[in-house]
Amino acid sequence: MSGLDVNRREFIKTAGMAGAALAMPSTGHTASSQKMIGIQVGAVSFADEGTEKVLDVLQERGGVNTLFLAVFTYGRGIAGRQIPGQPLPDHGKQEYDLNFHGGNFATPHPQYYRNTVIEAAHAPDHGNLDILEEVIPAAHKRGLKVVCWMEDVFRTDLPNIEKVQERDLYGRDVETLCVNNPNYLNFFTGLVEDYSRSYDIDGIMWGSERQGALSDSLGATHDTPPIDPGNVTCFCEFCQRKAKDRGINVERARQGFIELEKFVRAARSGKRPVDGCFVQFWRILLRYPELAAWEMLFTDSLRETYAALYKTVKTAKPAIPVGWHIWHNTSFNPIYRAEQDLQELSKYSDFIKVVVYNNCGGERMALYADNIGSTLYGDLSKQELTEFTYEVMHFKEGSYKQIPYTGLSADYVYRETQRALEGVAGTKTQIWSGIDVDIPTEPSNSKRTPQSVKEAVLAAFHAGASGVILSRKYSEMRIAHLSGAGEAIRELNLPR
Image 1 (cartoon, helix red, strand yellow):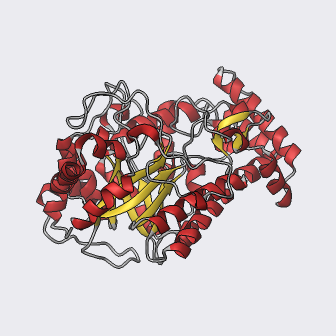
Image 2: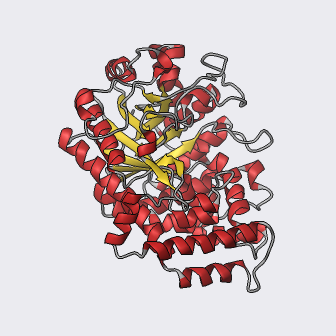
Image 3: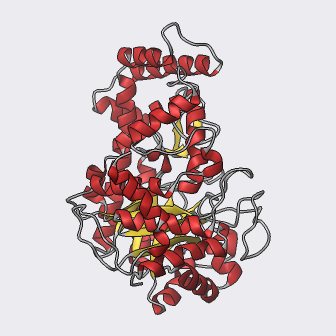
């Protein structure tokens, strides 16, 4: 173990004795005593508990100075109460919202949605409540900032949604929407312009937890179950047209994915190719390089979406920061990490939230090994694959069998935060580390404690982060665990 590793671990062990001033390593960024202490919070918390009470808790217990308010999503990940079946937290209504719907939790203004078939509907979950109108004045009165937090998650029962859905390898509609469909881009540019012009907001954060067809075919993700290799996307008319414009042979790409589908199905059934899984994958990829080209087609299209949203917001309200939530898969899948070129993203990013969820990260790392270990790395044991992943991703944690029960360490938070900072060195882009607080894990797997939250927050700031974002949502967090973040902020004596 290198001397640097020892120093990192010694810091974690002695975090409780942290001094008033934070020694910032040289990262190419200007150190600032003013740090962003954020929390992701949905409308349901304010509706259930009252705006002033929620703000009291977030400031007093968590040391929060910025609200990442979930204003648009149809998913339960960042909105709604606790996921049904998981233990309820020690605040809010002690019940599940079994009829969660989602949508726009603010008020849509029709003039911004004229060029899309996606309906700009107000979320019906809380009646006529406009969460931005409700929270912004109260937050600003306290000196708190409000960032609009939105994600790329829709329902399949929305009007006209079939006109924007992706098409899989065989032309079938799937749940996700196509980034190359003009209705998709026009909806999201309209949404961010609406928020920017209609409200006195302090920022925009958008997230899309998706990857291309190559990674999805291989199951290179911690999602469970992984996507069926016959359902990978997107092969709609817009993607085919864009592929042809880039010189990609669409039919060869399709045939390549059909061959990849056969390989994945066989590997998952336990049929080892004569030369092994890794060699067989490369045999297919070398024969069909269009597979990699199709993967990059999606990546470039998503980057174009980032750039368009950034430009839209800056045109409407130049002073407010715009940034992105980067999916946790960047810690596990080397292909996805390669696609998240932070120097490229920094061209249209004021900040990047890098997900470094270390408590649920152990469970997710093991799930990733389960998924990719049955396809691309089917020649390796799960332990060998875990060790390989640590080596190529440049962090070292426990064994495959241990990590679901222990989670990942605060040292992982340090390393991934520092890596991200090095990735944007020399740019204006700030790195805000996403820290998980009570994101659900399986009943027997690792759970948060106040101390582990505190250590993760301290590790992020010691690495040089400009801020932290407590995630996924306040409505699933326990107050004592939130207080672990507040204790870290107080010990570091950070201005708020």
